[in-house]
Image (cartoon, rainbow, N blue to C red; front, top):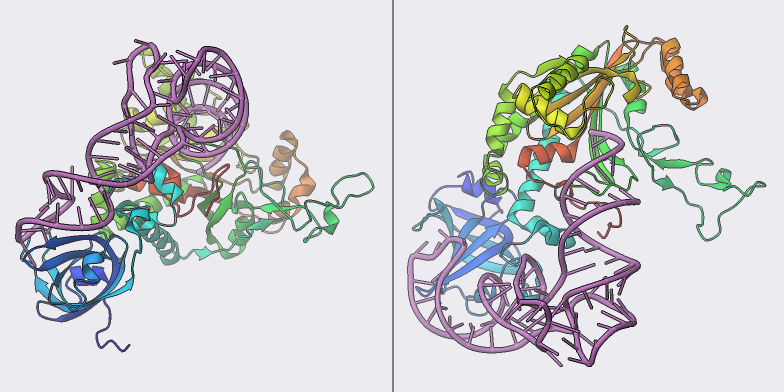
Length: 474
RNA sequence: UCCCCUGUAGCUCAAUUGGUAGAGCGAGCGGCUGUUAACCGCUAGGUUGCUGGUUCGAGUCCAGCCGGGGGAGCCA
């Protein structure tokens, strides 16, 4: 089956990169819709996922398989089309393909049973057919945006001298302290070995100790930060929390840069520069997909992103933020949760600060030590730590980060204060013994970032096969 | 884990104070059209999530279970 014409991507065809009027062209893809005209021809919209729009193929009734095959084409049929490029006589597209051959590669035998016909579907329903939803406009657009953002993240770090560190998925550390973990074991669950105290004998397990899926690569990546200076993680993360919200997944992807010889201000600068880069890149690279989200999913999302990339981020201390909130309350602003120094800011507080108070992204810094993790650097006031949250209009917290405690004596004090066992942190403490330096980093959830960029409301629709409590079908 | 909402045709939803189910879309067939959210007509398609209870009678009321969604907490 030698085909003389090399196939082109639909994106290239529509961009005029596969040739001009009269040039031969070949595309491979799936039917989105078929419309027949009694003028003796059918219009096939063919997509291959390379761009938002399908290409229109004109199939005339003179094709030898017109009656038997082309008139039976339905949504999702796979085709291999050869023909010539033509200027469209109709509206809605400039170039189309006048087919000389439409080979049916894969037919839909019974269209009545195809779960995703060309009609409106709810996102909830499409989650039940997650293996077919990437064929829809929305989910193919999400997939392209996810890919582009991921690529931009790597491009940003790589072009700025960062090394991508593959921190472990399976961790022997039971002290990462960020929520419930998924146990990793090869023990026979129906016959678990016990020791003399009738405890599970983990020495017989695969690793000879208890192991779990990672909830964060941060502690590990700090080791590489203190050797390669500028590093980042980008990979899957697992949390066994029983969280049932539109913002939580049991398996999600996270980005965690870490920079050495850096303080909190450097960290905030990095976060601002980084976010602006990936969003500006998205707007520039995928205008058709973003236009779709702006029109059908979340009107205004393009303007929101444009403003985000242009506005200078406000910097504000936690103490000042609380003072602003208290002043607002005294002037009549109502919050569900009361405000006072020492509280963790609620979502409603964060939104007020970024949306109402300053009207642009804001970095809140230096939080009370009692509401933050042990590894965050203690400030000279002994009351606050060098933590930061980046808050954005329309979403609230988008990044959380901190300067790390690099002084061993202070770190040990903090470990003791929080009733943690220093032995669990022996190698983390080693990093402070041998050539310690100030360093800082932050964490960014990929799916939440995509939610912000696209206006899609649920992170379950921003990862190909979502894992949530009681749900891991695919 | 807690609170609220919800489960009727392949999908989205109707069904008056309880009286044994309808529409739109999709699908099939036909008509019409260089069509593009096409349009017009016809046809097929349902043990109303599961189990039990109240009742002459349950999609409708009650209990339990299972699933879905939203919010809270936790966080990314």
